[in-house]
Amino acid sequence: MRPSPRTPRILSVLAVVGVLFAAFAPGLATTVRLEAKDDFFKLADFAVAPALIWIFPVLLLLLAGEAWYFHVKQKPVPKLVLPLFGAAFVIEILLVFYAGKTLTFTALLAGSLALAVPLIFGSLAGVLSERVGVVNIAIEGQLLAGAFVSALVASLTKSIWAGVFAAAVAGSLVAFVLAVFAIKYVVDQIIVGVVLNVLVVGLTNFLFSTLMNDLATYNSPPRFSSVAIPLLAQIPVIGSVLFNQTPIVYLMYVSVAAVWFALFKTRWGIRVRAVGEYPKAADTVGIKVFRTRYISVLIGGALAGLGGSFFTLGQVGAFGKEMTNGAGYIALAALIFGRWNPIRAAVAALLFGFSENLQFGLAIIGSPVPSEFLLMLPYVLTVVAVAGLVGRVVGPAAAGKPYLKS
Image (tube, rainbow, N blue to C red):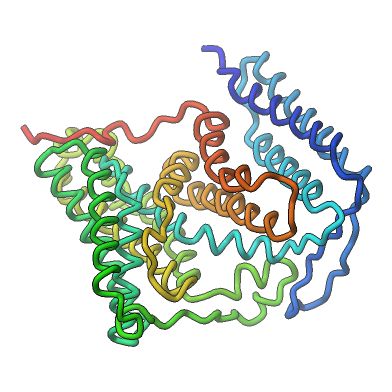
């Protein structure tokens, strides 16, 4: 079958956009700052001349041409084409938008990681659920429940780790309701997920308005402090970004590696994927389909709850109404973009976090780009990534399909 021309077409359009950006660039040099104060050695700031920006649209055109070449040859586009294209496009956008200004690269990366943490936890919840055959639309509700309960429990106990544990329990409870209705009562999983999201939003808003009026007692949780890992935190450029973080970020690193290892390197992971692909065959060989689904969905809910605790215990320091702001739905997009692989989903979540942080960075420097465009940037990227660049993706065969034991 002839490969779809979707990817070459999208790359061609974006390459033309890159040419237009370079053509209408302000013509001012962009100063790039890479250093952080605790690096082993300091990297000097450097300026990128306006003429050098043209390197990137030329590279975009060449990569789009390569994609068309492989399409004509009826071969898949090489895996490196898309990452290289994305990197070139992003660098050009940064150089154009920050023309005449200073681009603090490490700060941009650090902010992107902070915004991506709950998305990564949410995408892991989706991976564990859908790999076992349960579509988890309720990630948004699990994140929000984790955020609310972590703030409440940490405020009452004055223990930040009690808040983290409570967040995991809250996310698991929402996931348990999803699992019961989807697995036992065979209710449409998407409908259950949407209803749970609405329920959690309404419940947390009500409790926030009635219970958390006493901020000092119910909504003043302690916050995590950054913990620098010796030596690693002093690596230039990336050290302070990756290794001078709060404990919950380090927990996120461990979670991504653990979920990947569990799914692809253990007997349990084989059973999970078997149940998500062909539950009847899994049942025939003695795998307990229902129990496997319950366990996987509950673990995913716990991870989403941890992601919710990051909002209150890692960022804001208090709970606010609907503070997840659609993060669960973007986590679903990251899950699809990552093709139900924990590491790829985490990378996709980082991409979405970067686009959201770029919105804030451009607003701070007074970019001429309309604020409405900046606000919709993360969501536009979500749509383009899932519907355009990724093309047709196929999830686990049994996802969304109830299993009726014969």
